Amino acid sequence: MPQSDLIHVENIAKISTDAARAAYLYIIRMAERIQGFRCYPGTNPDLPRNFEFHDVSGQPYAVSISPDGLIFHFRKPDVKGYAAPAALASGLEQNEAGELEIHIHDVAKAQQIMQEIFGLVDRSHIRSVA
Image (cartoon, rainbow, N blue to C red; front, side, top):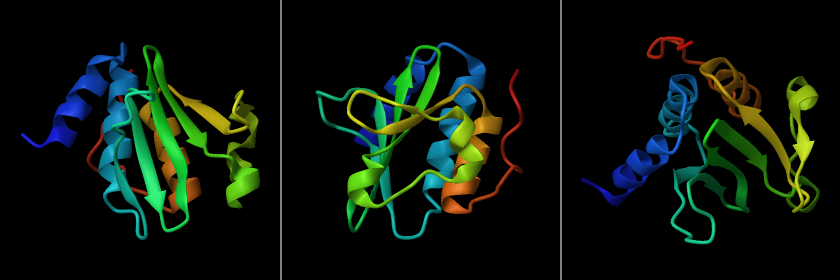
């Protein structure tokens, strides 16, 4: 089994709800389709349980795993020039590092984020988990 698969298994095991696990699976599946990005689970031991989105300018996005769900991070948008779409503004918070973040507890929120940021829509292979 590839190392990245083992990390995904560990990440999923740290999520306590089926709905958030389904959201994680949705994000990693959709990430494979993003043009211009390399996406993979993070390997930095100082930042455990995360999934990273890299492009030519760096790492503008990441998803971290918490027991009750996921957190999608907009990495220092003021420095990198990335901004969160207006449709996501109501759920955004700023963390201590100056990054914007939004909490994900289900597939619907994961779908909204992947559509608003990356223009990806695919609902055919995921069923909603309550």
